[in-house]
Length: 309
Image 1 (cartoon, one colour):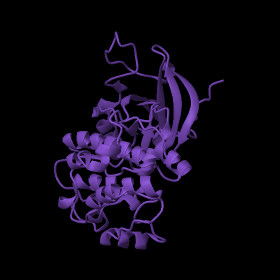
Image 2 (cartoon, one colour; image 1 turned 60 degrees about the vertical axis):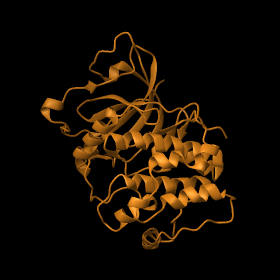
Image 3 (cartoon, helix red, strand yellow; image 1 turned 90 degrees about the vertical axis):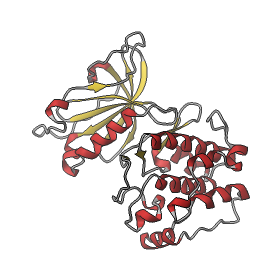
């Protein structure tokens, strides 16, 4: 028997959305391609499968849209939690940004609907699961795997930046893999769409750029910095500025205290790319285009984006 999607304890229903926005919406849906018109979704349109994950504000389930048999991931968010942490604006912004993005390396948000207690996001299903789990399982990645992921991420971020979207929280936990090992950016919770510099300190400590740690204005180049952090972590198994305490991590980031251990063995070309991205002056970090043209990427990345171990 398929698991039932749990409900939170009974309480007076809370409105998350403005009245004029309170109807189920979608832009592109997993339905019959002969009938691409918009439609109103409900839970009755889906068969619910196994749980895929659990987060602070809800859970994710494997699901199948009954009409088309299309497999999706259904993310269930409890309105009670959104009310409690006052995340209305952030969630609405995340949904609007992800709905607008159509790139092979960005997880699609097909649509959404809600009832009195829950919001349901209809997401592309990534069969390969979290990149974080693969990294923890293997300890570190091969240079070919790492280069393929970095190239895919770079292309996705170039697309996002072209649409004035800064991600601000790229990390292994926010990256998923499809059935062929292609990478998908899956979480846009800290993303912002803006042409001007931003001042909000957000993201995850190990991946923060120096300007964010120092509470200075930041722009798209914080994502370029994070690519350097990720490239290092893919190859060595740990983030480059990891330390015993939060204060020490802050200090190492601000000093760009970058060291390359003797093991595992990493090529000089990979170290060169990392060193050109982890630069304190954000204007001097390697551009996304230059990353794709870097010798290490050209030598190691699979142009199809499919990572083979």
